[in-house]
Image (cartoon, rainbow, N blue to C red; front, top):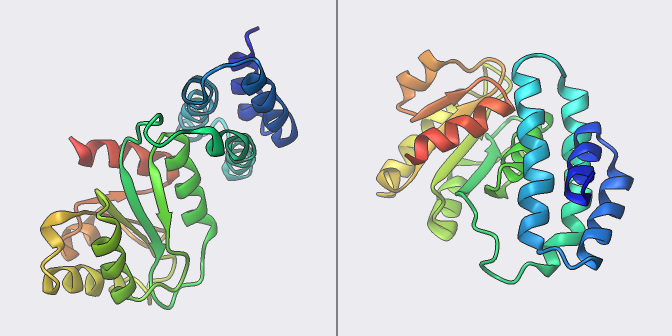
Length: 210
């Protein structure tokens, strides 16, 4: 089995220690960083995303795989000369104001990174002005917001309204998710997309880019 195949296998299995070791070994063997990321880690997370969607694995296994990927990427990222990795898109991500949940958001961020998407994570309890500021600063393709409480869902609407007031709404696609959120709610507040889980969020980003 080639070293890239091994990286893929241990990442799917969620073995962070092995993932880091093999990433170092691949670098020492002179394999291009972009190739290690694409054929090792991204290939692994594609499989993990599919398995998650088909309910063959669940959140704990998905988190372990994502952590293994991050352990390996820690070795690779410093070696990537600007531009060798073609990011698919740039996404600004955050949990809305008043909401302190981050497991779902972190999982979405990890899955997106695993799919070759650049993620700027604003964290939890993010007020609308901070989202607006980030859209101005980073000019992302997509703004992704998470809410885990019915009481914080209105903050998604007010963030979209704040983007409109700032004249930025047409510059960015808005993707929302979280347990109480639905497609119906996304339509009501004028979001561009809704994702039920982390695997779906990656698919939605690709869809919104087209």
